[in-house]
Length: 206
Image 1 (cartoon, rainbow, N blue to C red):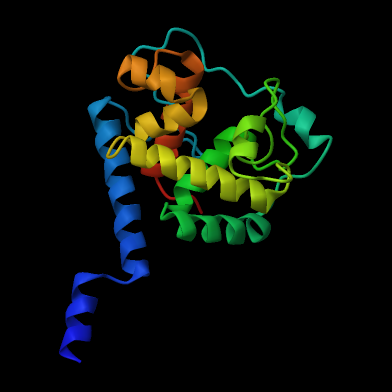
Image 2 (cartoon, rainbow, N blue to C red; image 1 turned 60 degrees about the vertical axis):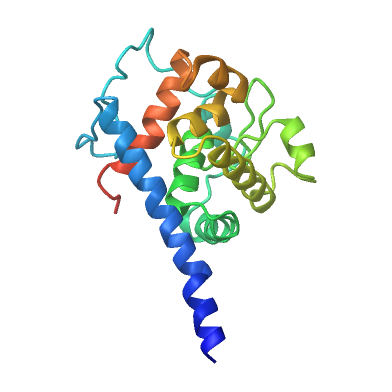
């Protein structure tokens, strides 16, 4: 009995580890926002609109537009999306809010979203990434989010304590992040990171 208690004391339950991981990610996002001189405003839709410290051009919208996606499918509602996100987040020890923010920025919740570059689905998986994670149907919400979460987990581990770089690598790939030692000077990537960190550190949405 004593040995069991000692083992339990040394190895916290999975739920505690997940809570600690989520808290660490939130603290990392908050520190980075403060270091960049950014703050969450009171925009009614929850968007983070404080300008990036050195934006070379206006934010680049996703392509094709949400209007085009809306003609092909409907965005997933919370009742459909949340169970998928929660399961993937638990498996990869990520914050569900982080996954939801990435999905919101990548596809606005449209499972049929396809970019001009060929990125697919809720978390906009490139075909090579889908193959890497053995995704059979990249437009399947569950398969897409599971693979996207695995990729994001790899990037969070690659850039420990640097959520901005992990997000930038999700958007632009690790090579430019490594070359620039952080978020690269691309308007689209800078806006991408700014928006997601803003949603994570801003007021909770109702």
